[in-house]
Length: 268
Length: 303
Image (cartoon, rainbow over all chains, first blue to last red; front, side, top):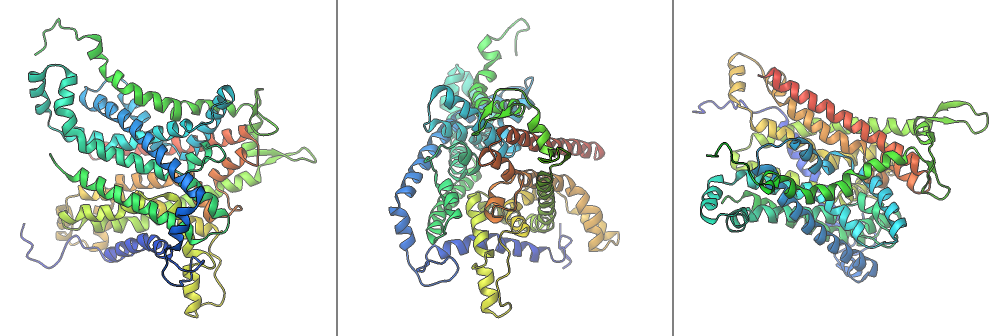
């Protein structure tokens, strides 16, 4: 359609200004946080020169090391479990005709997104307390199980999207050639699905790494993850060490999100 | 293709349930199932040191809304609780409205970029969203605290002599929630706008409408589903917010999430905490049902 006039029907007064302001305001606090992590002074507002001392002190802080390792273990396990469960669930809900109760199943899979985190956190606190009394186990598996649960919808979404975008005729042709559903899956579906699975796993990893509320309620004393450690620190004196840890976490999250974005943009 | 008398083997007919079982099992054990236990706990008695005593009691539910005066045994409303309910509603509502005011133009802006650019803009909006909630709240705290950037800047410029108390106020909580949940408002509105055919707008201009009328009578009604979805997506987490009020409100300005947490900490009243959680859950469910109803009605009216 020829745009011969200079009057753009889509322009609304003030909207671009508000939008750009939003973008700036959205990034400004985070940028300031990152900048002040390099502050040579102890304050988090008064700039005193460039220094990486806070990164070093965080690196050597035993509690930080402990929390970091725990965060990584939980995130890795939860991501693996959640992604595996999500792959199977996605296959079940996109390849079969609409079975009875499928909308209930859909609601159950996405339940962590629909229910406020604090309600789930309370429920798990109570439930695991009961189990702790009964079995005496106080290890990491409570946290891993809890994280796996709320990571499932995040792993599920990109996998399902990828499945729905895939060409069914390839699978049907393979079924004619290979026979059993398992072989079709291994030889045809899985390789095509791989970027979606990877995207889902990364998303689950980030979500688990970042979780605060559920972890705070479910953890036992001394079982800090990086976010709960920071939450504890915020109650006491705040040094730019928190900025340094935050910057590292931000870097991880941003990297993973960008990779996820690139992965989900790629077509076959 | 299929022979009329062909019956599929059991494994094939129920294969989708087999595939679904790991996910459903995990979710039932660690997300869905424990909610029933919460319901049960809300009808038990509080133990002295936390935990519960397994004897039936409706004290918890009573204490959600009402209280018995200690000295003269009169019934009254639990003022402290009601104040917290009110603050939660108020802040969640204000956050939603402000998010709409900022989010709609932003979504509109992205939707009117050239198609190739749009994904990049959406990525820009979503990147902060996928970062840690605590970090984002902390970043806001840095900005508005008395020794923070905003106050230092204003004092250095000579605009004010003393720092403005912004942290530990309701305003701080609202700003924090707005900062955290804004992308959730932008996303559905953008989805609505992206599908919108601007030829309708051209037609409106041909009929001598001005920009404001075009916005009000053409664009807004079409994006109504997106607006409602965005509002729900902001309102629900805002109602149950815990980290943001805890960090930005100090101990004094509690929202529902903090009140619930108190019962499992110093408050030592697990049944009350359970009852409050169920109350929050009920409110959220109602909001969701309202959304589903209104979304359904939209489709009918545009049929």
